[in-house]
Image (cartoon, rainbow, N blue to C red; front, side, top):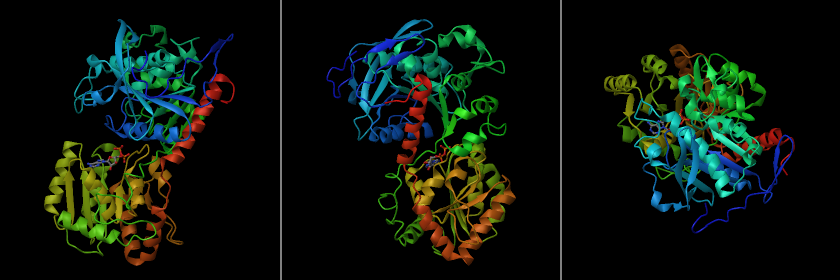
Length: 519
Ligand code: ADP
């Protein structure tokens, strides 16, 4: 398959030399070659945090000189007429025979980084990515086994033989398994594999009878690969097969090896604990920059954040809250799900309302939670507002206009809002779990150090106490608050730091695979 009008030169298939037990693929141009496979990539299609990572991390890696290419499905809604159609088709081996897929190529916006879209309408030309809200398409195993297999076929067909293949979440969990099985003693078998867990709650669990859909023999349905408590579990197979594993924060990497956070895979993850890394996600520092944010009332930065008061006044005005500069304003933004601990927050709010505060909540999700916060807003309109829905502009205005941001998460693989809030000088009040613990430095009343407030127990009392602690600091030690704001705004949450860590991970995976450094 060749591009009709090749925008970027496609490297020739590297020479391969077969040795007794491994294949050595000579590197082409000296750059590390990485294939990045994901079921969603922003801005093309997004349902969650995975898409953000997949849309930004490769860009930062490309800037580090890595020849990284991204593969995703061509979903309904993607502007396919802007994409270059590659000649010919991919022959993807499936359990029913070869499926013929088209490939279109685009670029990550603002880069020359190729994104290959696998075009197979029977699987991907649908209104939803994984299924209607609250449901999963019944053929998801087939759809994503297809994506995984197609991404490897693509490499061979275009002559891009990666040094490392990076797969993400259960949808592409079959990739490291295929590299070790169906690609055995073929060029792709030389690629080191990295598997990243963005969301452990979704593991790709299917009945054992569906094993044939993977195209792998039933002998792989065993406790060391796919079998997990009587079901077939794709994530487990990836955990067993990938050279290296990672998740999106160091604390979460430790937590998921324990029963409280492991969703049943803690034993598996602990077994591979030595190969499991936590790499903190970055944030898009261009989208979330108070100095250049078209969504907010006035720009400001760490050197001079006096205009934050203007943003607060504008937010109070927009919300119809009293225009009182001195009353502390608390923001809450996020999906209304059990993960975020909003059910516990609901029990804490009544007591928080005893103080002179203002609170704004923006979120959607569980219908019960939506109804509750709507009701509470109608009852406490003097100090509480609830916006049920998804509103990116308002999320920016809340980050800029609030004094504090509340995140009482039950678990939090990484979390973005607490990083956004710090960049906007809004001090996070968080539960000490996952990425929250890795990104927020707890306030030290003796020295004034810290960038936020941390509590540990997930109960209403802990939330109330910590909000009270923030409140008393705001009133009694304003100099500490000012210093914390500045410190928070100066934190480095950029993707450059994360990209350096991923590059290290890739080099390590390569070394594990080949028994030698990448040169
Ligand atoms: P998660 O990925 O678990 O939902 P994160 O904190 O990592 O949580 O990221 C959530 C992202 O979605 C943030 O960018 C946040 O601002 C945004 N977000 C969540 N809910 C809403 C909403 N109702 N309106 C606008 N933005 C939202």
